[in-house]
Amino acid sequence: MSRHQTLPMTVSLIIPTYNRAHMITAAIRSALAQTRVPDEIVVVDDGSTDNTVEVLEQFAPLVRIVRQPNRGRSSARNNGIRNAKGDAVLFLDSDDMLMPRAVDACVAVLERRPEIDVVYGDAELVDVHGNFLCKYSDRMTGERPVGNILGELGRRCCLTMVTMVRKTALVGVAFEEGMEFGEDYDFWRQLAARSQFAYVDEPLMRYRIHPGMTVTSNPIKTLDSELEVQRRVHAMPEFACLPRRVRAMAYSSHGAKQAMRDRGRLARAMFWKAIVTDPTSLTPYALLGLSLFGLRPLQYAILKRRKMMGDNIAIEAGTKAIAQQRAVPAEDASDHDMAEVEEHIYG
Image (cartoon, rainbow, N blue to C red; front, top):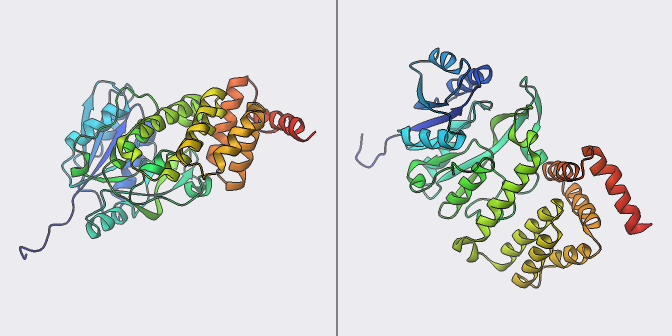
């Protein structure tokens, strides 16, 4: 080998798990079925009390098992990072599965583009039995940001958990173990402050939708954690260096989410902040003006706008938040309650 040639990039797959004996097998098999199998598969068992460890031992020595007391998925991921030996790490939750080309597709980008530290892509949403539902990009529409994505993260989290990161970019970055929800979003925030991102326009994972998921079981806490991470983004010195219009868009989006949580004062404060940041942006003026008529007209307008944009994930999160706050079924929050608002505006 010439001294000018470089060795192939090595990859560590990190899978945190807790009491997922009935799902972890599918995750590991999807890793072993890759067109480019990871150089190591590190499964961190977070103190499971079922037969997860017995299931994992069936895959030895292809899988390295790291055991720890139950400290949560963030601790398990951080432990996996510490134990990873590869040049890059790829994350996978134990209830999900990799698409066959996931490792190949991500490595190809990192090997070809040394300026890129993080690679992410699309996902297939499947039901608990693995049946295809739709693509993630069909439910969360819009362009996928590349390069410096901090401004976009100030508005929303557009990444899935299956993301490949250079090990060198992880120095000083970790999943916050005190966060019960949104820890992955916060992790991307830290990386985005100093790393360039690339997007692979193909599904990298099969994202399983099931009742035990955080997003489906705790929509209010999920939305509140999203708001907390966005506040952290807005407070970052790197965010302050972004163009005014980018920051104003982030403030407006944050205000809209506060409105969906029935927090009128916070919503109006964010709309005003957006106006001060970029007086040429029209959206915050419209949102602020509508908020003066009360939160229901504003919430109706926000849901209408998201429906026009095709952002189904945001619509579902918003209607679930309204439903839980008002103790009504979700369909009432999106239909009956909003119809009442429409009558108030146009009647």
